[in-house]
Image (tube, rainbow, N blue to C red; front, side, top):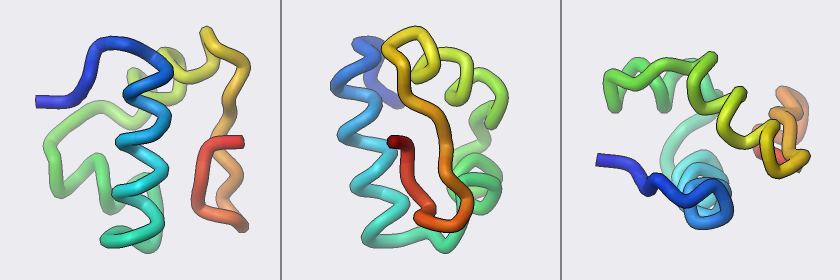
Amino acid sequence: MIPEDPMILLSYINTQLRDFYPSLEELCNSMQISEEDIKKRLHTVDYDYDKELNQFI
């Protein structure tokens, strides 16, 4: 289960990316969640995924 609140989700996802996953794709595959859903939810608070940094900025 991932957080519903976008700001908490941001922190959670970026921490997971930093500590455990080399890409958003691998995180989503491992957690069985939609990559597009995560991107859309975080875009609502003006954050987008940066593949090179492997985080939402």
